[in-house]
Length: 436
Image (cartoon, rainbow, N blue to C red; front, side):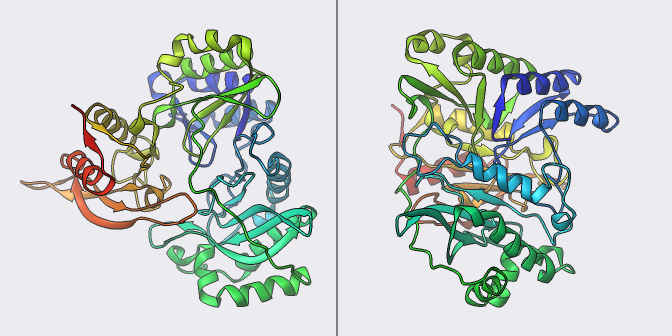
């Protein structure tokens, strides 16, 4: 669902509108939209209405393949090596039987994440299977990386399988890799069921041999090259098409209300090509803006809320849904993440971006260990008895050529103390300065 047209947005808004203040929509770290506050009795009608505009939730939860993510700028990116839309669609259709459900991949040991990079700064190594576009002997294909995991018990970025495949074989090798794990992964201990545990148990060289037995002779990967840092997608930026631009809007912690969704649909129709893109940082892109309307677009009232050039800490904050809606969450995330980012923007200056990630529980949907600073929800004891929200804090995650995950350095930090700790870390570890 990384691409949405204005009609799809209006249908999503109409669904959420039924639930008043309890209803909202969250942009997720998988370039999806999750509808919040809906009633279970309404689900048949909701699913029907989504299907009518080509949106599906088939195999989006439980032990299934999640949606395939790609470059949010696919097809318009001046720096893209390959347009990922064709390949994410092919993989999505393959894994889910074109949205009708695929029994072959519907009973996996745990969830499965696939991604296709389109440019050198598409950082996707937290997925189980990643395809990086690479030329070999003048032919454009994909280098294959495997084993990314963010979880309660293990966090690791993917590693190269030393395999290069032609474009036509992307589904074939996906099926082989996923089925090897499906048939041999641990189904007795759920906390050991993820693909990386199986990969670690037999080793990357042995796993490559097993893949080769099913695929045939494998070609070696000439190697992927990553940019030193990710581009900012905020603001007005040129597309690869002449005289067209895209607008990157900051959606604070990814949360949208009904009126927001309706207004974004209107903007995409009035100024663009009736299309928006969703990013893994929980933000939104409107594409196809012509140069003669850019000033008028920037003066729209909603741009004051969803800024083109957001303040540093607000822009770099990512959060899962937290205890507001998720039964697994041990702590609030979105509210406290937004409040703290706004306070940091008022009090600190920083020359280089530091990503700040919040996740409500160790399942790590908010990708805490990918952040320069990451908060993972927990419970801490209160004076006088009882518990309250708290956080374990990791430091040092990077989403660039260094490929580093954060290490937990502080545990059981109360919600009342977390702001001062984050501020202290920013000053001492990342050279933040107090505003004068």
